[in-house]
Length: 201
Image 1 (tube, rainbow, N blue to C red):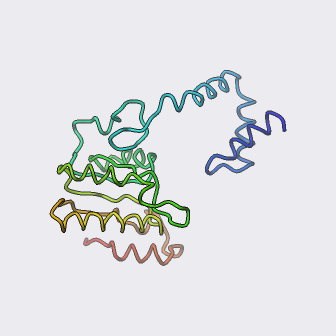
Image 2: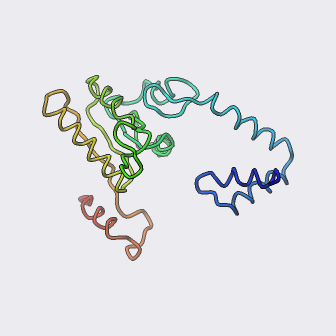
């Protein structure tokens, strides 16, 4: 296996990149100025040294705490719970949410051996016990694993409320038909969620 094949194989291990796409990336790098390859290699080799987890929310950051957690203009009474660090950027870029975040680091998936103990749920409960949080928004994917995790978190918060240890309200992002979507191509679960999440006009 030559250098070209080895690099193609490495790129093909990235999510969403197949062998053909990996090959195109390698040839693109080869056809570019060598300085591009050197810069790319330097950035990749320094990535783990420059980026770490935020000690507050668990997102990736160069500074600790991250810019979102350090922002005094954020509403600290609302936590948006997400599965992965990249979800923070997606939601923050929408400019619809001005609260703070908590990254779980995955979803409960028993078949894959991922239980509540593998996620950052304990840290989330600590933040809630601090007493400042009034709403928990579950921004988890509408999948079996996302639903399982949401139900588990909801039950934990209900138990805390029942014992008088919390008054946090739990909400979940609405899910349903996408903008510009066609009813013809909507699956039954999507339509069901759309009807349940309908709003008054």
